[in-house]
Amino acid sequence: MINSRQIRQLVARTYNAISQKYVSSYPFSQYTQYVDRFLSKLKPNSRILDLGCGPGIVAKYITERGHKIVGIDISPAMLKMASKAAPSAKFRLESMQDVSFPKASFDGAVAIFSLLHIPSYELQPIVNKVRSFIKKDGYFLIAVVRGKGEHISPDPLIKGRSMFWRGFIRYEINEALMKAGFKILVIETNYSKNTFGIERQLWILCQAI
Ligand SMILES: C[S@@+](CC[C@H](N)C(=O)[O-])C[C@H]1O[C@@H](n2cnc3c(N)ncnc32)[C@H](O)[C@@H]1O
Image 1 (tube, protein in one colour):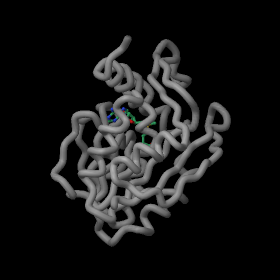
Image 2 (cartoon, helix red, strand yellow):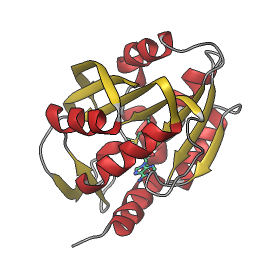
Image 3 (spheres, rainbow, N blue to C red):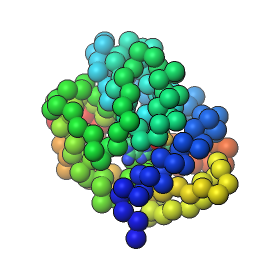
Image 4 (cartoon, rainbow, N blue to C red):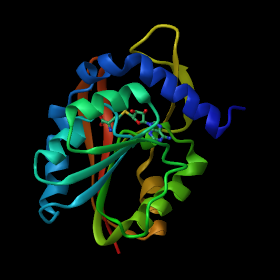
């Protein structure tokens, strides 16, 4: 049985190897509407935490719209790209499991396709922590892929490397968010076409209560 630290090592190594390919394989243009809806709730110059920021595509989009970003990721190669993509943002090599910030120090947070690399037993503690970082009435935008179970399987972007993935069912993520002190505002399924076919995504916008 592989533990949390080993999962992070596996995930970081694979993302280091696919960082360049990742950007062209998963089209951001297909989900700007969800980021726009999140941004429409924010006051100007809000401070946003980007959990699993990857190559900084979302960070770039958000900083260009006048907000501040602090991005964290476990892949140094991804962070290098992120720093170039969003030069005004701050980035830290850190995991969602270990990261710490003062209470209520952010106006919002995003976790776009990053919680799907976290084993299910770590979801609730991480969501609780994110809630503590966000001010009351602040917003949290999440994107995951629908499905059941968790597994390690070959990464489709590179031969000979594996990735840890987990799928989400609605009620599970809803329950974790509500237990942590979030109110669900919108939860939607999006069918997104990428290099590998059609992906069933869940997009959730919630508010800290
Ligand atoms: C599918 S990519 C998404 C990147 C970015 N959010 C986007 O939408 O383009 C997932 C990212 O989450 C990061 N990640 C995975 N597990 C993580 C963890 N435990 N803590 C922080 N980042 C993590 C990966 O390194 C990778 O950059």
